[in-house]
Image (tube, rainbow, N blue to C red; front, side, top):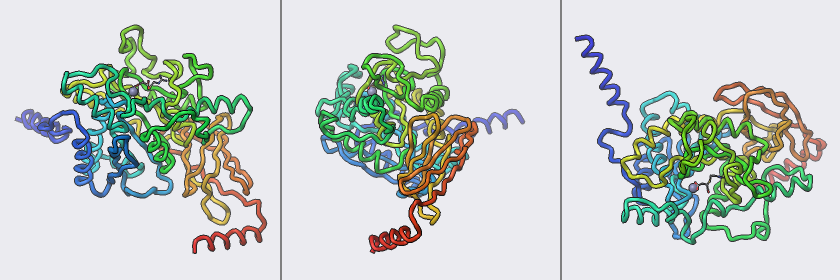
Length: 443
Ligand code: GEM
Ligand code: ZN
């Protein structure tokens, strides 16, 4: 009798815990269905969501995005921002579909009070854009509905037939050039239209603006065609395929492994690559340029133009699998998707302020031995992803005396607080004048 009761309780627990519900229909979501998932989630979880569109595609379709956090619509000082972007290549749909499950999953688990999800949502501003190429998707979907499959490249590009993952400004090239000239610039690279040398597509422009509008710290760009976590640099100095290390190689390896090892099969040794030609990637991760160089990709633009660290996730051999396979993709990726979001909390974080108490925006945070600086956001807050260790960290800003501190990073998912108070180089009188001018500005 006791056993039977135990069995029934176990069964009930499994039933209650199952997500999505047993009567959930796994299907591919077209543009309307995609929007419906976002809106329904916002209705279920109004206190932790905001649906917004950072802009439109060539065919004027909104790049709908949902924000999931305890205080949607505002940047909470000190709270890191995270993003997932799916379906950049219109025919690579696994990312799109698993993000469309992740969204209601986060809402449901938050409402249920699942500790890891509550902690994540309360302490992170998560942005999820299931598709950044709705026009390409529409083309791929049409082919899929007609033929039951996708022919590898149909719908990959946007409506102007441009590969969006080649359309970003080639900041790697500019960075390599700056390095050759012994320039000290190692982030926030700017390029003139002439230097960029090609037209930026509408989708690219929307993402570039979005990248600078929010102080993103970590993101992933979800693709298909193989099973691997790919990290910067995506392009090499000489254009040939070989490992091209970036200054944050150790951090990117840790981030990529966090995903691949939490994924059901990505890091399995002995697995073949999707084209079956060779053994798969060690640990399920790869340096982008080592795999094959991709100049003008979104991943490295995040790294070289903003404070955001991005990796590219290849989620399956079949870019447009039948809907029956979607539950398996969700099962395989669910833990990895959560784990990777938690990684936004590694390293150090804090505020840079002046002695007057004013917060300092655009102060530079540099770490000795890592040639890649991070800057503070408008509230003076910063996040510097780092692997465990002791670091000599300097905060600086023109007009202030730089300050250096030792900051220790433990092997946890909680960033070490490292705050800096900078002393102004200005005299008291100059500071008074500046304060008065600011007051004037406000009026
Ligand atoms: C890739 S992006 C990921 C791989 N990056 C590098 N450097 N090899 C692309 O855009 O070609 C693969 C994809 O389309 O999914
Ligand atoms: Zn792709």
